[in-house]
Amino acid sequence: EQLANQIAAGEVVERPSSVVKELVENAVDAGSTTIDIAIEEGGLSLVRVTDNGSGIEPDDIEKAFFRHATSKLASSKDLFRIASLGFRGEALPSIAAVAKVELISSPEATGLGKRLVIEGGSVKKLEDANAPQGTDIAVRDLFFNTPARLKYMKSIQTEIGHIADYANRLALAHPGIAFTLKHNGNTLLRTTGTGDILQAFAAIYGTTTAKSMLIVEGEHPDYDLRGYISRPELTRANRNGITIVVNGRYIKSYIINQAILQAYHTLLPINRFPMVVLDLKMHPSLLDVNVHPSKMEVRFSKEPELRQFIEETLGKALGRERH
Ligand code: ADP
Ligand code: MG
Image 1 (cartoon, helix red, strand yellow):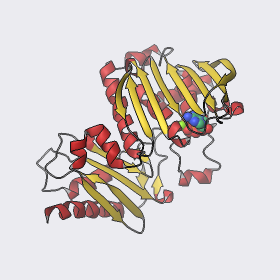
Image 2 (tube, protein in one colour):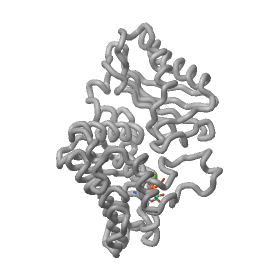
Image 3 (cartoon, helix red, strand yellow):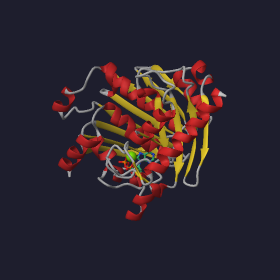
Image 4 (cartoon, helix red, strand yellow):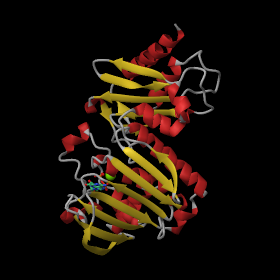
């Protein structure tokens, strides 16, 4: 069991940003409206995520660290209509296998909750604790018991870059949640959680850039697309300004990238890329998110239709601009 967790940890917990990803996704799944992320030393010494979500029932706290003890899938049929970000029940046990974890959670505003300390997979402490509703989880000394992996970590600055990038994407994917990200006490991101994508965008890329964006709106029997794209004049040297959100999940998609670039084709100089935030909604059955443990890659069941719809919708947004 401990070995299985360490092996799974190799897949799920590649670096500090993977810990941030898994903890923040849990906070999102718990219905939180505020999520605070605090990291120290690029996340290697601390990743702490505090949310005001549903919390965990005191009797379930230990269970959350058992493998495949997800509370999010009732049957295998659910695998085909996954609405939550997590569903594998692998993250917490994997993280606890390679770090020192302290979790305090309460499901109620009464303030009665539990505190669990688990290090390298073994439970050190489980006790009653006072806590506001929600969950506060601190992951310290990542890879303390897997020195080989620790050795592969890049500079603190590189790790912060990955974490900030991920937090930014999540903030765009969930504009209704107020996010903060702090590194060694310095605020790197603060969104207000108004539900407006453009406000989240402005918090990340600045108000001037946000003001110059074009609105994207498109409907189709299978899809609903909203978002913002940059005017052809505003270009970047890489694709990092492209954020694709499908059913509330930040994903990477080759075919959607292709559709975006196709919509801009002839409008952009070679090797320049637009800034794009797309919020795509579709029936969960048209989407397979169970492709890779990181859940960042997905498979669409009607790729050509989707590609065409996106290209046309973006083309309209750009065309409105030209006329
Ligand atoms: P998964 O997200 O795939 O279900 P995890 O290992 O990430 O698996 O989490 C295990 C379980 O712990 C979740 O299914 C959920 O019930 C509970 N949990 C974890 N984090 C939180 C949180 N921040 N708020 C409420 N419940 C949580
Ligand atoms: Mg999870």
